[in-house]
Length: 317
Length: 291
Image 1: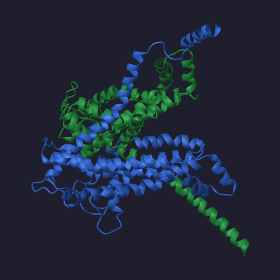
Image 2 (image 1 turned 90 degrees about the vertical axis):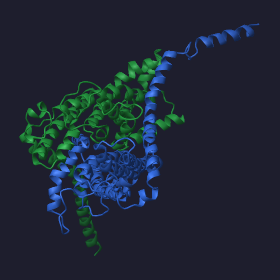
Image 3 (image 1 turned 180 degrees about the horizontal axis):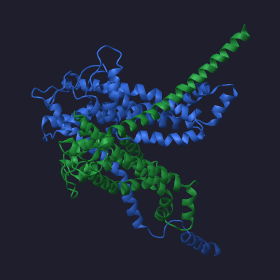
Image 4 (image 1 turned 90 degrees about the horizontal axis):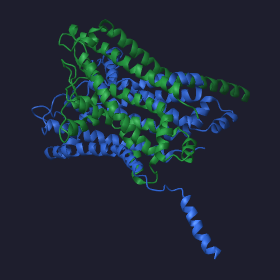
């Protein structure tokens, strides 16, 4: 008798004190749905980028064989006698990128090691905002700087024979390297400061100097983050437009000499975009073909960087 | 003998240590020195043209009479629009990802990786997107301020979302738990506890995102920013010029006078940018709470 009455009372009590809402909060669900829509806008953006690139590229490849596009050595798509070999743009991009990496990889890593292992807290506090400012300077400004300030020095100090012209890949690449330096420095420094102090203290206790602790303990332990920052620097150098558009010259040029004027993939897209290309014209489609190449390369490089961090990150407590 | 080698390796090691210290410092100094070099050379070069004509005159083919009034107004319009789009969308996405998304669902992980990836997509690719979908094609807004605002918003959204997420994540869980324990719903917790506490961080992220947008020229070349605009914008459907594109056009001209003009316009752009940056840093230091 008592058992049978006790049971419904208990379940009623449980119902009254349930942590679930008494009735579903539709309003909240609508708001959360709206928030989800904001987040999924990023998926929409990526899809639209792909959708905007693919159809004109397919159209383009119907007119120009993929073989000519990827292996041709002359690029003059907007001329009367158009040629569609993208290789000159690719070498231009690689030469400028190499110049940029020569600056930003060693010096960016050096800055990171200094900030993380040598600098006193107040230096770090003073320098980091300055590096943020350096990273925040618009790329047109860097382009102007490369053309009007750095290029004359490159011409004057050119060590091999004929001095380069005003427009050359080297000045664009060097300035781009300085532009990317803060990115490398700050990402690498983040990775190094995630290395636990115990490792450093252990190395110091064994008699290591700062240099030895930095090169043999901290840098190896933070290697995944450091490599990821290099990969990201590579991707930013490939994708940078304004510096090369202003300072590297406008002629596609199949060459590896950084003293020559060159056009990169991005600079071509920018230059072709300034002239108002009629929709559907071959000139219009080349923008998208070059854009597809750029997007595919940077997309995989970026994925690689995200993966490196995920896979090889050592989780320290 | 062994004592001598030990001593010599010790000095060798000390020399190496010193050299390494200097080498690492060089990396940092290279960045700082270039910044100083860049700023001084631009100011010195642009000094003769840093007068009121710079923001009171329209562009002209005669450098002595040219100014950047239309570009300045265009930049203000485009930035206003970008802020209007970016703030609600970016904060909304960040709140969703931090407060409501269940990490084990594949679509939430997809969104997360996707945002990281979008942050590293070259800006000119956004220009291509704008050219194909916003300027022409489905939306067909033409090369207008509205199109520019939409494209720059998409461009800076990942930056704003990532910064806002960090700000939201910095609010300790105990605040949320306290609020929920007092009977607030999840949404009330977010709007009355989490967001107010995260506002300084979010504002900093928004300002840094906008300061990226204000200097962006590449996508706007494709969206159709002009360089010879003789009017200030009249509405969202107005054609426009912006400062970075104007600077680009002036620096690409062979005449030295236009380079001077470009330098002066750069100084103007940098002053605005540094003011935004300084405000962001001040905001961060003034209002950031340590829990």
